[in-house]
Amino acid sequence: MTSRIEILNAGGYRSDGRRQFELRTIEIDFSPHGSNSDGSATISHGLTQVSVSVFGPREAKMRSQTFHDRANINIELNIAPFSAGERRKRGRGDKRVLELVQTLKSTFEPVIQMSLYPRSQIDIYVQVLQQDGGLLQACINATTLALANAGIPLFDLVCAVTGGVHSTSPLLDLTQLEENDLPNVTIAVMPRSGKMALVSMETRLHVDRFEEIFRLAGEASTVIHGEIKRAVKETTANLVDAMQPGKSSAGTNAENEY
Amino acid sequence: MSDFKMIAFTSFPQYQETFKTPVFEEDGDEMDLDENGFLESDELKLAWPGESLTSAQAYMRGHGTYVDNDEVIASVAGVVERVNKLITVRPVRTRYNPEVGDLVVGRITEVQARRWKVEANSRQEAVLMLSSVNLPGGVQRRKLESDELQMRMFFEEGDLLVAEVQAFFGDGTMSLHTRSLSYGKLRNGQLITVPPNLVRRLKSHFISLPCGVDLILGLNGYIWISKHVKENEREGEEGFDAEAVYSNRNDNIDDSTRIAISRVANIISVLASYSVPLTDTILLEAYEWSVEQEGDPKDLLQDHVGETLVTTVTARG
Image (cartoon, rainbow over all chains, first blue to last red; front, side):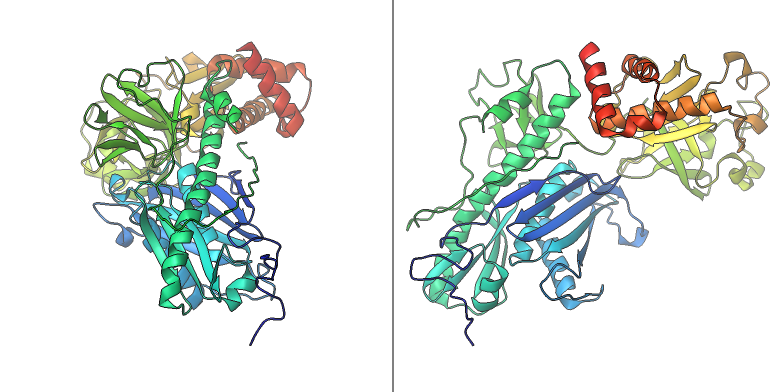
């Protein structure tokens, strides 16, 4: 079955007007959506929008879940019924949701410095508001931002990006339309060390194509990292600035840079 | 608050054949890593997770950093601080990190054997031992079995209290005490929560505003705003009145005091939403300004009024 829309037309443009290696617009917002969350972030990759609230480290609700030498990470993910083109309500036990939660957990467990908070719990609530491809990528990036916003010690800012391949030409940051038709892979990188936090592929991909996409996605993640870093930096500078009125601080400098 | 948006349109013009592991590129604005120049200037240095600060050979790592590959690397977003050879990063936003001697406001969550569990915005719940509270019938006396049985007479689940951090247990849990007449159960007022870093250490965390309102600025970001209690009407040392100290009933609070309390509460929540550190002088100025405007306390929560308040107060301060 082939889609009626050309994935990549003769002029080298994709269905949404992007070039092959072009990423979608990234928007980052740190405004708190709850009244009392410790950290929060909303990220949009084009039309995909995910919002994350972080609570903690705090006392665990269930004592049986705690570890004596490290924090317990609890992730809950909810996909809004209106987020996709076709309205669909997913329950708590939905396989897709459980799998996403498990993937997020295994991505962030090595990144959060959990040993600093024994017997505590860090709650991460992920809310998917809009879906247009690259759901896992948006979830990971939003969680990184919310954790950084909550002041939870991280080894690095994890950045995720999706790559796919159309016949022989690789594409980056796929939309839902492209994701349905193309073999794709999501990777999450720890940019400082260059280590992979996650490589996830749910489709079949020719082994000769894998390396190319993998490398390309690795490069794209540095661009995402730039955006994430810039957002964290700006919000930090603003907060530091507000804390000391009258003093000219690094905040003004950081803003002038861009 | 700190909301902002940004838009970036990024593209890859050409695909490079040679691929290196994605290492984050150093910008021109990176911190001066020069041996002598490191953190010498007055300017505040900011860091974020994964940001390399300096060599681990020359410097020691403190809180908010970790060492990897002979480099000191920040693990939180915040301000870099240096004391001699010790590098720390103080996060801009975080939960309360307790220190011995801190004054905190907390809420009882659980009554256990010979202890209460207290929620105090920390990473774990604090512990208040039965032996660390004042008991009726004399400040200094042994705890009896009967005291253990009637612990709910003193503090119940949901009660608010003001206490001091006494010590830490092995796992970092803090232990509180209320063995002073200024500490104990709270009533006649309301609680406001702000980010803990907005409450600076002050000479006294008990503030009496001239409008007939008492404030307790807990270092954990919990602030208690209550009706002013006259010095001579406080439950005295001699006649330590357990009924009064552990009472669950509010006194009569007249309308003007109620309005003053809500005015102070709204001022604090407005200042906190603009991340203005709270001190007695700023609160007093803000209160005077707000009374001058002749509006209801609820007007303060409107965006433009709040903004004017913050600009007026910070400009004067």
